[in-house]
Image (cartoon, rainbow, N blue to C red; front, side, top):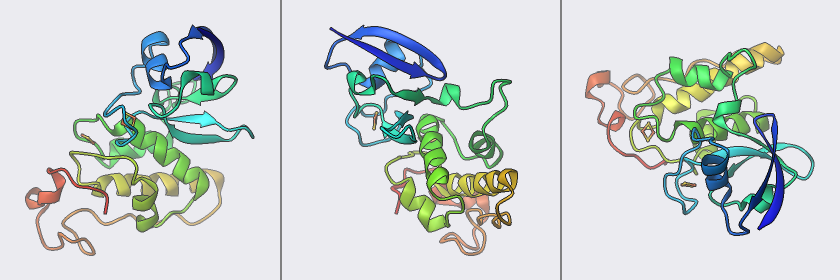
Amino acid sequence: MTRVSIKVDGVEYEDDVEPRTLLVHHLRERLGKVGTVVGCDTSNCGACTVLMSDADGRQRSVKSCAVLAVQANDREIITIEGLSGPDRTLHPVQRAFHQAHALQCGFCTPGMIMAAVDLLEENADPTEEEIREGLEGNLCRCTGYQNIVRAVREASAEIREIHGTAEPAPPSPLAGEDETPDSGLKRDNVPDETIPQPVP
Ligand code: FES
Ligand code: FES
């Protein structure tokens, strides 16, 4: 057993862990952070993504099934459960996912949101292409990604507005509207909205 001290969602935890324990299992099974989910356990799907401070204290997204709990010693972790404000106000990315209908079953959503938060830290005004590229490690089996991209664009505009840095970005087109591969189809008839799609 190894003693680890990890700050998670603002609370310091000290625990003895097996050296082989994965961070995602530590978060879920020891600390009860079940908002972080396991989709594959093999670092492919991104469902387990959380933010973890690096050596410089900067929060970066990591797949917590690819990190040992001991590697998080003396680091700070933020999970989906710690993303909202102290008064439970949703983070702009959470709000945008809700408003833009960027989820269906919701299984990918915690990881997708955490990855999007990191993406927007890196790039405050990403293009649709940059969002797709930035989230390519996070898989969604339900949505076809279109509304996820739209949500991230809307969140980026809101965050930039809050920080007063730039003009809000124009909304990303909805599936079935102009400039999408489904252009001309009614939303109800857009096949990509309901079948698994890899990020192009
Ligand atoms: Fe970690 Fe799938 S559970 S990447
Ligand atoms: Fe179901 Fe993404 S909403 S996997």
